[in-house]
Length: 528
Image 1 (tube, rainbow, N blue to C red):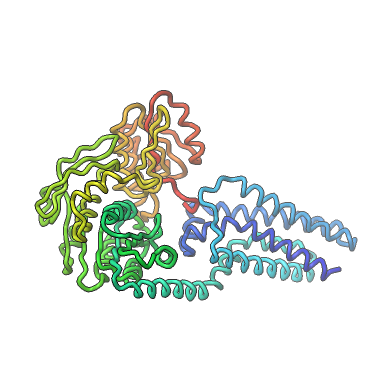
Image 2 (image 1 turned 90 degrees about the vertical axis):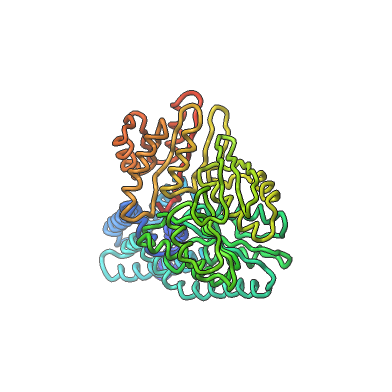
């Protein structure tokens, strides 16, 4: 009977513990399987989930121990106490899944491998604790400790799988490299920058499609595995140009991507403070973005969008063939934009390349748009696309989803900038909001991954909100910091509404009558 109970209980416990660990699997995936990212989530949430696991373990352990103490002498009855473990675990799973999840766990092959290994470890842990408890009065109630150590066991599963995952990733990347090497006529373009990468990729692809068959890494697939997926699964033998978006959180990330792709052309969009927490310093951010330029294929061309001093400094440092683009009057610029006119319908301006001028009309919004379009136009022009074709492509552009995307909904105009999370972009979005009629409202949780500069940046965001918006709906715990900055800048306290969740903030929007424009700025995923 003991053996049967051990096998059945341990297996069921393993399944329930794996279900209880769903949040851990999700956060690891959102944190790119980096332990530091998971720990930062624990710290940012004040160890809320560890407290939940402790409460679950305490209630299960106490309940089972009391049952064993009362009915331990009754051979067949004593096992019924294990139902307390099952019932409380099931209730925990039910309550966890009742909470809204913004970014559900994607059951990728890697995620499935970790889940299976975690199940095995949970089952072994439950069996071991039952055996250990049988030596003492605790009996099987000691198995409740497995609930307390759910984060530790999931971390152990990731640690065990890490060598295999590194080998698997290497093989997948190597396959992508070989495929690229098998296409010697393919023109490869790398795009990087602190922000504007995805929008620039969409702009450039649209321009180059006027003359070439173009493939590009989808959405924000800007990691080595994401780019490898684009190459292995999306690049066709007759493609003439491949555009790779290159993202980074640490020094060396861009170098890894550039060595893999070996780009013939490079485009640097901007240097900002995004991911300052993981980079450690502004110097490391600039150093990492420049890794793209340093690792271009011989004879390549680098285009620098001269919209900020950081990009201009890297342009001056560059010894390769290069082009600087920017506003009229920018010293050393090979291409410029001028006569900018903005409005709710889009952005119009002139670009001048090789002493030729063309008027650009686009539906894209934002102070950064003329610079991005010009930089992409300069690169496309270098590849033989005519200015008239460039203007035609610009007119066909549609906003990239969640990046200053305009959505009309009756009397409400929504500006969806949910993907944004940097000081420069947030100010830009607020400037756009200020140009709309009606009540101007921002809904935001603030900015993240700025390290020691995060509170200062969110206070400054509050000051910008006071300047450009009529109402602020602040989501989550960073709202207190933003509110402090808004109040200091003169915004009335009754115009600032704090909400625990995005859903609560959206529901409260209905209290503001009449016509309104609502900016959704930076909808953070679940690991923040």
